Amino acid sequence: QVQLVESGGGLLQAGGSLTLSCAASGRTFESYHVAWFRQAPGKEREFVGTVGLSGRTTYYSDSVKGRFTISRDNTKNTVYLQMNSLNSEDTGGYSCSAREGGVLYTRPRDYEYWGQGTQVTVSS
Image (cartoon, rainbow, N blue to C red; front, top):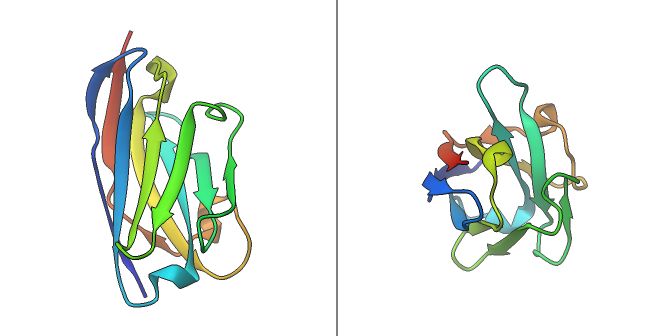
């Protein structure tokens, strides 16, 4: 079991950068795949990216590929989402999620544990 808490959201202008953190509790954090999702009002939850157990493997949606980078520090029980070249389409509530084992899933229903989310708002 793992508990997740996101932080780092905020309001910024288009073209800016922001780093989100997902802090996890639990002794077996290194056993979990972690993914980031986002959701704008009136829209379905959207996959952003995911990182494997060791951090060596990552996978991103086409909409953020090349701009976002996911990394993890298992010694700190933290996963990061570095976001660059942000635009208004990146606005939404960002949540991290985790699942034990498996592969790098991209569907919300494949993740058992969720944080409360942090809001990212990008002004045009």
